[in-house]
Image (cartoon, rainbow, N blue to C red):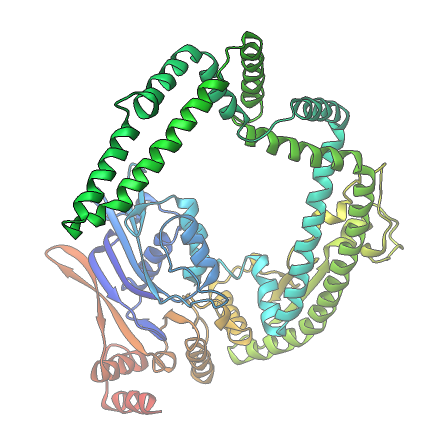
Length: 599
């Protein structure tokens, strides 16, 4: 919800800070007091068009800032996460952790030169991204700003919310994802076919090259060790012989000294037991030196310089180095490339069988999708008639009793088929044969018109007056009519699915008395699931406010300024009395206002 709105140097506003509550927030005040300026500023904040006329005269820069407290909303969270504007704790295994409400601060800096800036949570953002956020934050109705009402995509969402078709929609969405997966696999296979013969030759050559090399992991390291030995035979022989003599053969060899020391320590231990502790260590040293001496002797006996073997090793290392450079930098990578190439070659060599399998899978996936979509289509057509009746009844309650409302549910696939088939051919698109060309399957035109919501195009039509034809909602001229229609739609459909701040302007145009009571009650009902901000001139509507704000315009030091005051009970009685009688407030008006609040 919108918690705080700061406005600076906008129109008649020098500095203005407005706090809002959950529920129903109502703005009242004299005509021309500046209520619509606040709504206009909010519209600019969420991505509306800014003109220089909106900037306060003489100001070099204007600012609009809003603080939103956002509850859990998967679409909005994903949008903000992708942009790096928020982060949530990781989800626990098998359990989705519902994130706590978080704050979102949007700030627009406006300049007459057009060098405007947008900040979201203190990070620079683009106007396009801000407009993507808008649908999750604020929905403005009135004076040409009916963003949701005029968007035909939301008509389908409203109809489905009214019908309660969430399970069918999930079934269609799952079938669509399955269909898209098969389509992508088939498209990838078709791309492979275009390069198939060249790729097969390349893969066969590479497989043969690596297999002939008979690579063994670690072979290069072993060969490097052997090469070092062969190129240093004389040095290694001398080292072995010298060390062997010092340890074993010389008269004063290490082993001879250790044996002598062991004998002397044994004799000492007969006089002092503490020396017995060294027997084990001396014996181990003797055994270790004996083992080392025999190893040196055997190693020296085997050393033999072989030019032929050295040349063989060098040739092999050159071959291994070439293959490693070509296939990933290591023997492991080359063997991995071999395995991948074999799999790839097998796929290409069996592409005909694979293509036939994918075509069969695609036919089944299409059948499942179109069957689910057709069931959803029938449910929408059935629900559309009930929705029309409920909306027309609601329109009568808000002084639009002569209005007509119609829901048109069109199957996009039938439209596509009718453009290529005879008008009398009404066969369901899903039953049409699949065009194929070899195994390079052509994508039928109808598959370009499907989606995760099914094959339907839903659009609302409306006529406010007798004798006028039904027209798409986007061609409605009256902001008041559009606002009241949206109020009816929002209260009939499941408005709690996407809670946000909903703004109504001019909603009470041309109504009064009992109808105003009904409009107020509908606003109150809508505010149970959404934050509602409404401008009204009707006391019968204002009485329902959870937060009543009055807007005043006054002259101060030869300048006009706008202020907003939050009214408590006494102030509300005075404001309702003014709305009932005008400038001169009577005692009867105050009593009537008090009765309205008590009711």
